[in-house]
Image 1 (tube, rainbow, N blue to C red):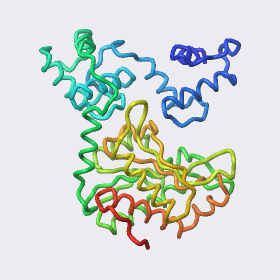
Image 2 (image 1 turned 120 degrees about the horizontal axis):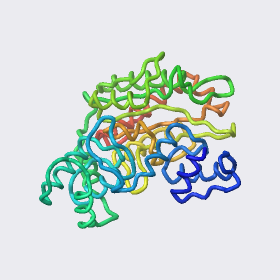
Image 3 (image 1 turned 90 degrees about the horizontal axis):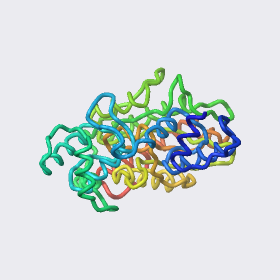
Image 4 (image 1 turned 180 degrees about the vertical axis):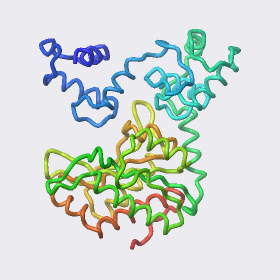
Length: 348
C-alpha cells in the first residue's frame, strides 16, 4: 500500500497523510482520479490493470534506455517517444506506450535522418536529438493521419473481411453477475456466436477469440487477433452498476490523453447508432478507453456493452434469443457500414 501511495503522490495525486499504509477514502479518491485521467475503468480499486498503469506512468521520457525487446518496453516514456516521432513525420504507429516493431522502424529512420547510428536504441544521444528538434504539438501525427487515410480507402464490401470477435471474460473470470445469476462470461459467448453467424451470412470471415470453456489472457486474445490479420475487432461485454436501474448501451474505442483511434471511434459510433435506433436502447454514448484489448490489438477495435447485466429487465433481455439475434444484426450491420456501405439496411 505504501508503494501505491508513493506512486500516486509522485504523480501529483493527494493522499491523506493519516492514511499512511492504509487504503482509506482519500486513497480511493486518488485512485479514482488517476483512473479517470488515464481513461481506465473507474472503480477505485487497484486491480492488475490499474497497477500496471501506475508503474508505466512513473517512466518519464529519457529515464531509461528503450529498444525493441520481448516482452516489450511499456510506459509513458514510450508513448512520449511515439508522439514525438509521429509529429516529426516518422510513423511510430498508434501512441499506445508499447515499444513494438513500428516504433523501432520509426526510431531507426529518425536516427538515419539526423546522422546517428541506426541501432534502434533510445539512449542519451538520441533523446537529446529528439529534444533539440522540439516537435510541434498538439496536432495529428503521422499515425493518426495514416489511420484516417486507411478509413477512406476501405473497400465497400464485407466479402472476405477478417473480423475478430471476442466474448468477454470466460470460465475462470466470469465478470459481473445479474440478480438472476447470469454472468458476463456465460452470456457473452452466445452473443459472439450469433454475431459470427450473421457476419458469415454477409460474406465475412469471422473468428471467435475463445471457446465457451476457456478463458485466455487478454494479451493472448490480442495476439490471436493480430496473427489472424483481423481488419476489425468487436469485443462483447455487459455493463454493471450498483444501481439496478442503470440501463443502456455503450461502446468504447482505444484512446487516452492526446490520442485516439479514428477507426475505432468510427466503428463505435456506427454501433451505437444501430443499437439505439433499431432496438430503442438508452444511449450511453461512445467513449475513448485505454482497455488492454483495445490497446494491444493493431486494428480498429471496439468494446461493446449492449446493456446492463445488473438491471433485471435488461438481464432478461440478455437471456432472450430474439434479442441476441437483434444485437448480432445491429453489430454486423455496423461492421458492414464501416467497410463502406454508408446507408443502413431496412432491418431483419
